Image 1 (spheres, rainbow, N blue to C red):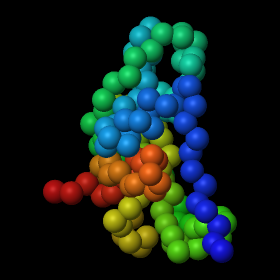
Image 2 (image 1 turned 120 degrees about the vertical axis):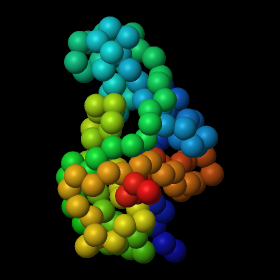
Image 3 (image 1 turned 90 degrees about the vertical axis):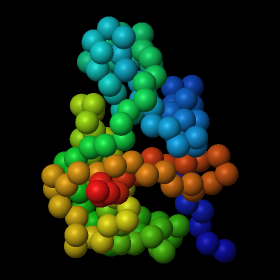
Length: 136
């Protein structure tokens, strides 16, 4: 029997994010007070400590800030996924998030390359926002 892939567990702060991803919409929280986006979803703004926020749709485009290629699976559940690219993405809207780069060979990835969102269904109700090189 193979090990199951660990999945996110939506909570009160992140449920809207995961529901939107399942619909293939990219929503993040934006603080009503300082107007900054934030990732990961949470109840208090990490910049100004306001509790007022709204969910906004983002473009899903960004730039690769940094990355590493994972060659050794972190658990047996990822045995058939390696190598994969774990990346920090600077979104066009000014927030940085961690994700994976799909549809890209590890030797082709470059810091500064433009990327766009793509959604990966990993379970019945869980869809992961991932990225790929920007398609012309």
